[in-house]
Image 1 (cartoon, rainbow, N blue to C red):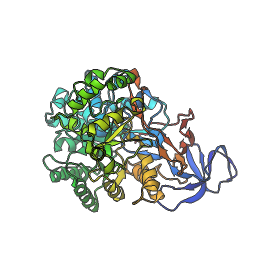
Image 2: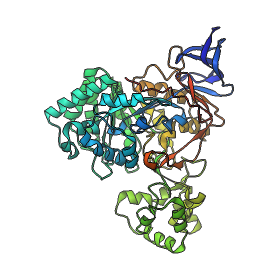
Image 3: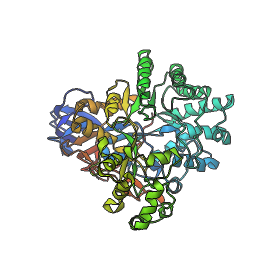
Image 4: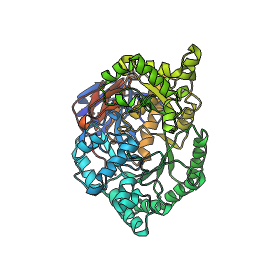
Length: 569
């Protein structure tokens, strides 16, 4: 090449998404596509010096919840701060289309409850310029943004649209309902939906505590929707299930029947539940059997514990259920800290937190044997000996006192970490086994969701930094980890134009200084519509993130470019 191209990334160590060895090479991009890999003679209108850095394809994140944020925001943070160049939203069966005007509030309540996105922010940020799913895609398409975005048709919205109040009452769909859902699912896929998602988990409830409308959907209803995808000849199926109603085997057989009849690929969310710590292994064994039979099924897994961050700025702390804590909820942080430093209030709260909690969710907030200091940099694999219960046993003080004092650190901005999945044995060996399995892909980061208690949109950074460099044992080769977060995730949702560094593919890249790659501690920001708050977690070490040949971030700072687009399947 002896011409001029839009961008040349020079001299980096390429992990090209194939899983093969690192190779020093240049990458040239023109008109959004990779045009050369190797020694590039062409000059770039813009160039990035990648010497000493890892160059990867842009990360593809399969599990986000930017369904509201995509309408009002040009930047899909936090995902775009962690090397993600393509995000898939509409997971867990929740979203905002199709929708009739009378049901808008119900969908907001469902999203607020299931995904912990403030209702006030959704009320102010959503303009509702759509009814159909195609209309929603058009609304998303009109908004310029930093990275690419794919949308799934959510079961909750679809069911409410067809069945109204009957959906909320968990009534079975009749034959006419199923026929209409099948038609609407096919229409959504033809309009550009990348797939369909549903949840069958009792833990997913609206902000009013109502079960998600899809909780007890029958096999006939799900089959009708899956056949709608088959009618369109496109789209993937995404499932969340507790796998216990009526039984794990019966639920699994139903999922396999959907894939077998529709021919559409399916992924399901998989994590180690501490209450049934071996459950995940059985599901992976069943997945392997299904794949051996030719069924395209995989599990989405996480690279670290799934848990909540407890703090005075968020919605939960070990003292949230205490009667004396509730009056503090409306105070600004400084006022809350000042009140908690009062010795009399401290004694009342410490007395109240010792009382038995009937609510399982409240019990989890005071399970001090599984609550840890979080720190900066944050520690996602804390030893059991660092839990507040273990510390208390060593120093002879109540664990609640230690947690109380920890919450007041950093002027009340300190966070505590309470993992509730993938950490039954106080290590990440389970995550190692899940990541290593041939029938899994990284996912479950929930970017854009659970904004007051979770900050897991940073999963891609953990995948590289922890599993490729920092862990004392069980590390994976960097090229293999990159493949998992790029080519493998892209292929799982049928995106064959990205996820690799190869001529003709989309010009999405990351330039990463692996020596500096690190997560910062999450911080609370009040940057949602209506002043809504969310935890945001930045990273260090991303020298550049490139979307369609355009650098959108350099050293973690936005360049101002917004080349991201809606990807219609």
